Every structure is written in structure tokens, then in C-alpha cells.
Image 1 (tube, one colour):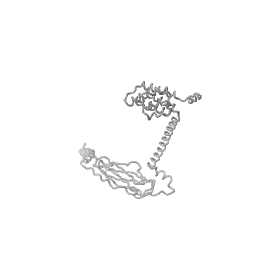
Image 2 (cartoon, helix red, strand yellow):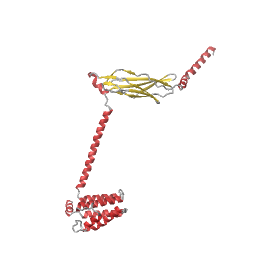
Image 3 (tube, helix red, strand yellow):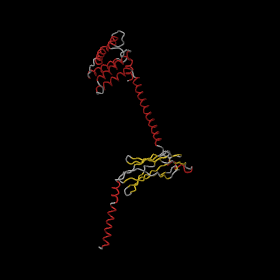
Image 4 (tube, helix red, strand yellow):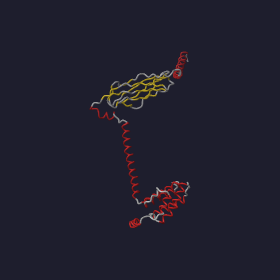
Length: 316
């Protein structure tokens, strides 16, 4: 190898090493540079007047050190415009800096003045706000209106939300009305039953709840007392729920009492136990409670009027 070739070969190596060291050198040098967020003025195409159904491109440029992260761009569109997709951020590399081009596309959706928008560029805790210039959105010619307007005027999301809210309100109102009507029918059906049938159903339900441990025994005994007193009041016109136990038992002892004699011993025992549970806080037991429910059902079934029993037998 001649001397001249050796010189050229070494110059090639030096240039290659130097080229390979350019980016690391620029990066390490950028570590000494502060982040100064100074975006260039907005460039808008077209400017001043926008066509309904067309698009407007808005861009700005900011330079940051190599070590700084990419800027985050947030766009608030002006009135009568919407953003067409997310803002785009593209990088162009310089020796110790990145040149970031921030671009967004706006679409006019209604004719009139489009004012009030802004572009916010943020890098870490530093932000810069650039006000969007105003545009005048012109109406389309009549011969171009239909197909372009269909594409340029999407339904506002708020309008769709109002429709969804109205539909949900109608559905909920209909469901609530159906539930109310069904509950009312059920109450009317129970209310239309004779007092002995209604009391017998309530006692059956109470017995099932006690056996399945779905109700506490003191609560169940209170419900049993309420069913029996209400039945006596409705069946025999006795003030069972407004009198004390002593007053009620005294009224049963009168000759003009409408309650048959065979029911009085059970009621005397039952009301005495009820007072113990209510005032002495005596805890009822399950088996005696179930026997009391059974005896109460016997009282109800034996006190069915004769004409009602004959009618039921004839229907069968």
C-alpha cells in the first residue's frame, strides 16, 4: 500500500468515527440545554374562510433538546368546527435538538363564525397556549349541498345522548308502571279475599318462613299476634288491636260477645304468652310458636261462616 492510499484510508476511518460520534455528541451536549417551550405562531391553511364539509390544517413548530420528551398537544376546536382525529406530532432531528411539528385537522360542520378555539402544547410542567384565529364558514351552494352536508354534519354526540336519555326514561317509566300495576293487582286480589282466607294465607306464609329460618322468632311471634288480632277485629268486629289484653279478655267474658266459647281458651293462653314476649322479653321457642300458628289456623278455619263453607263445597 502506497503512502497516499494509507493517508486516504486513515482519513476515511477518521471521518467514519467522527460521523458515528455526531449523534452521541449532540445528545450529551443537549443535556446542558434547558427546555424552553416557545412554539412558533400557528400556520392555518386555509386562513380566514373555510368551506363547509372541507378541512382546515393547523400546525406549529417547537424546538426542544434531544433529551426532552415529545410535546403533548391538546386542541379545543372553535365553535362550528370539530377535530378530525387526534393531533399529530412529527420529529425532525437536528444536531442537539429535535424540531417537533404539531399538526391538527379541523372540519367545519356548520355555517357561520368559527371562533374561540385554542391549541395547548405541553412538555412536562411547561405549557404554551396558542389561540386559534377565527374563520368564516360559508354555506354550500344548493347544487352541492346534499351529499357533502351528509358527510360534513355528523350528529352531535350531545343530541344522541338526549335521545338515549329520553328512551331510557320511557323504558324505565313503562317498567315502573307495569310493576306498580302488578303490585296493585296483587294487593287488590288479596284485599278481595274473605278475611278468613286472607288470614289463613298469611299464617301459612308465616309458618313456612319460620321453618325455613327466614324470620327471627320474636319477629315471627309479633307477626302472628298481629294476624290474629286483625282477624278477630275484621271477622267479629272486636277492637282487638286497640285494647289491652286484660280489656280484651274481659270483653270476651260478656254474654253478648260474638266470639264462640270454644275459641276463648286458646285466645287467653295465646295473649298471655304474647304479653310475656312483648313486655317480659321472653324469647319464644320454635316448636311452641309453630303449635300456636297451627292453633291459630284451626281457629280461622273453624270460624268460617256456614254459608261460605256450603258455597265452596258446592263449587267443588
